[in-house]
Image (tube, helix red, strand yellow):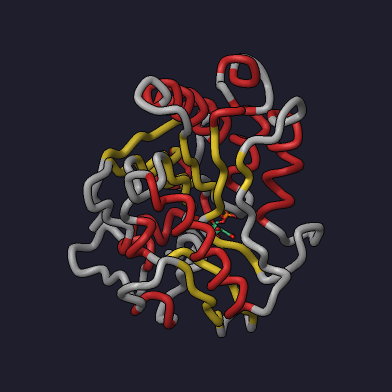
Length: 246
Ligand code: 6PG
């Protein structure tokens, strides 16, 4: 069963726009209370439209990009210039545009390293960053796969059982690949979590996770239960009814 606030938009374009305005509002509000604002990015295809929008007006000139610190919720175990890299997708979609004139905090997962080492190093990075700050991202962006995974927390994988670590290397049998992922334990420290779901292909799984007995082991996105933060689902009509309105 999902919890949180559900925002439904007519289509994917309006979804991206609504999320962009929501992010800007949260960033500007957050920076009234603090100098730096931490945002964890999601990979995959869904956020690409959002990221490109953020690199355009009115967002490009109205968000104080040099006060943001960027993190990732997960990464594929590839170099940063590999086409599968979540870092590369975000860099090309908006980071290289919004950071053109200065170098904000970009905390990339060094997923080109051996998986276990990459996970340990990113955990060190996070622990150093949050050593003198309230624990948890100010804003966390996540997606959801057709199997109900989020970040790289895939169904029935070891990462789901991790009670203490913030970052783990996670072997995904269905992909026959290693991933680096932040754990639900750490992700749930975020103050605002946004889960983006778009497209007809997600209708079945979005319906399945509404079941009262749906399990986080089978649908890891259900393990996203912010401990003290807000959870916002942004989904389009295609996910709800299977046919988006143009
Ligand atoms: C990744 C993401 C992953 C993604 C989902 C949904 O590295 O791929 O972190 O969790 O959010 O797989 O991906 P789509 O947006 O492409 O459907």
